[in-house]
Amino acid sequence: MLDKLIFVINCGSSSLKFKIIDPIKKKTLLFGLAENFHNNNSIIKWNFNEKKKKIKFYNKITHKFILNYLVEKILKKNLLYDSIIGIGHRIVHGGEKFINSVLITDTVLEEIKKASIFAPLHNPIQVIGVKEMKKILPHLKNKQVAVFDTAFHQTIPIKSYLYALPIIFYKKYKIRRYGAHGTSHKYVTQIAAKFLNIKLHNFNCISCHLGNGSSITAINNGKSIDTSMGLTPLEGLVMGTRCGNIDPAIIFYMFNELNFDMDTIYNILTKKSGMLGLTNITSDFRYIEENYFKNNDIKIATDVFIHNLTKYIASYSVLMNNKIHAIIFTGGIGENSTLIREKTIKKLKILNFFIDKKLNNIFKYGKIGLISTNFSIPIIVIPTNEELMISQETFKIIYKIK
Ligand code: AMP
Image 1 (spheres, rainbow, N blue to C red):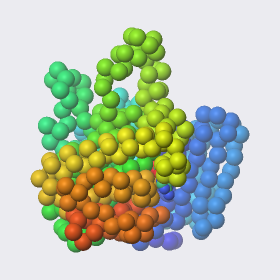
Image 2: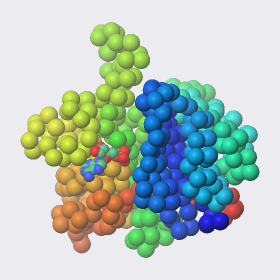
Image 3: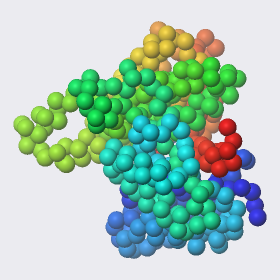
Image 4: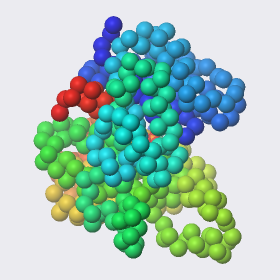
């Protein structure tokens, strides 16, 4: 038997990501992805011992099928099966109930199901994932842990999470800001506090998770006090294909005047907007960065992205009286896009943020480091690792470590 390993499972609506992690050594032994479940082009790809493998199925597959395949054909074959001591599930929405990760009991599973109204594409599938794993690995049925994207934001005060709607919509229907990317914001906050040698409970920062989905969080004394995503991950910053903040009246205009039906409008706001919608070309920031000075549509779209990000950083900075120890950049764009980091920070001189161009060019492609000048409030690039965080939380809960 190897070490104590955690099986991390992230069930999406038509995909499943997985990792086998040693949470103590912080080492990933195996990772992969199964995708395209609903068409005849489904595939599972994985990486073990630096060897890449893939199997195509040429038919529709289910989460149940792929979890069985993973255990029987991959984990057992690679001698990892016996070392797995727990299963960590990424759960998108925990409603107001879950402020921390929890061991999954029948009651917890019921609550996760109830929160499905706010994450209809994710929570029901994630419940299936938990139930299937109980059958596939019955000896671990009481060692499954739910790690919620929303839990980290349960500390935000009522003034940050209420929408100015008739109060019944919160009291009866629980419509409020829940936020997302909590696992990532929590992870990078912990790393940043260690990096700067400040105790987590004294640490104040602004965490910018910029990826296909982007969100920004204000963290005071190690706790989330405001975040840009809302009831769902559609609110906030300009994203890859999501619109972020818009005037809600636009939806009525599209419906009443332009005669779009509600499904089409939802599809436009979630899949066809953001950088893809503005550029009319791509949501890929590698392409966007390369073409910023060559294509005017790309320049304008990027300027809109930066303008929104700057407004959030400035307003969160003010919320914390500018007594912040760091800005953190993470996510595919935050970790790699020197252009976005430079152009955003240049607008924030008034708040004592100054970027060091040379350092900004060094810290990308998975490197952690400071990209600010000596005069600046520290600006740090930190590669996120949500799965490692899930494995560590799972380990702690199984062994009842505080
Ligand atoms: P994520 O959702 O965190 O995986 O981030 C995906 C986003 O990161 C996409 O827009 C990518 O284009 C962007 N990204 C990934 N690598 C780079 C890079 N080297 N330079 C700029 N953007 C990148």
